Amino acid sequence: MRDSYFASAVKRGLPILLPHAWGSLVLIALLLGVCARESAAQTPQKQTFTYKQVGNLSIQADVHRLPDGQVKPVIFWIHGGALIFGDRERINAEQVRRYLEAGYILVSIDHRLAPETKLPAILEDVQDAYRWVREKGPALFQADPDRIAVMGKSAGGYVTLTAGYRFTPRPDALVSFYGYGDVVGAWSSRPDPFYSKQPRVEKEKAYSLLGTAPISQATYENRWPYYLYCRQNGLWPLEVVGLDPDKEPGAFRPYCPLQNVSEDYPPTLLLHGDKDTDVPFEQSVLMDQALERKGVPHQLIRIAGGGHNFDANMKDPRTIWALEQVLSFLKERLR
Image (cartoon, rainbow, N blue to C red; front, side, top):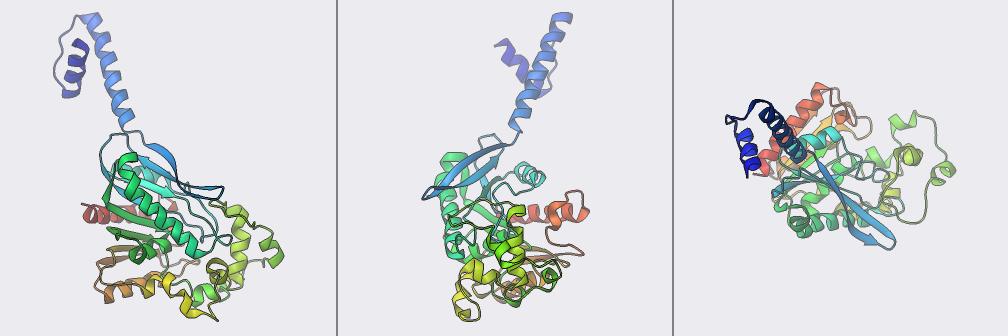
């Protein structure tokens, strides 16, 4: 009982009278114990769960949170990688820390990757993960199922934008870092001028990097030549979606956020660098205009001089400012 009194007094800043030598030792020990407990309570924890099984493939999610036991709103994070490479660990650790300290749980998911798996099944995985968070999250990691923001970068930003009309119930907010609203525009379905200046990748080399079994993780290094081949030849929509945009342009409509914005689309924050050579800044401008036409609360943040993956450098003032805008948006929408 005496120890608990001392600990309480230390935390509350009350004076403690003890015999000089013995008391000093006890006080130091108590201070160290309190600091250690408070430090442990602020140390982020990560748990890995399998949210879906497809044959022999376990598709997983990482749950990041502070171990305080409180029910919290969720950031549902979707990684980038052109839907071809990447995984749930492809996320900036400093940004994760900032989100957790702001009072959120962050769930970063894997999904099956193209071209072994085509876009319809990839989107199905992400919807299943969202459903899992809502149904299992409250018991597994104290998630608030009624306060969820979907976020992602690049291809993950694109999938985030599809969540605005494909997820049920609708997320409370969407945040797209340099995502795209159109998977079949000239930017992706025609040879890309920027990538065409790079050394040509031959078809045999590109396809030698692929397998036949579905996968949910792949490194940038291993799959980049295949992606480069797709962009150099305007084949990305065909390879990822499995449909030819020249022969079946209408079949892409269900997968284009630009064509599926309605009045009940969630509030959306778009962030995009105006020097992006991978996903044109215009993609976020077009999405911004579509949201405006339907009266959806939204904001487009233009990062002057920012390229693709502009937010990777957490020492860049533009990145810090952009993250502050995201946190402000989340605070408003997940109250």
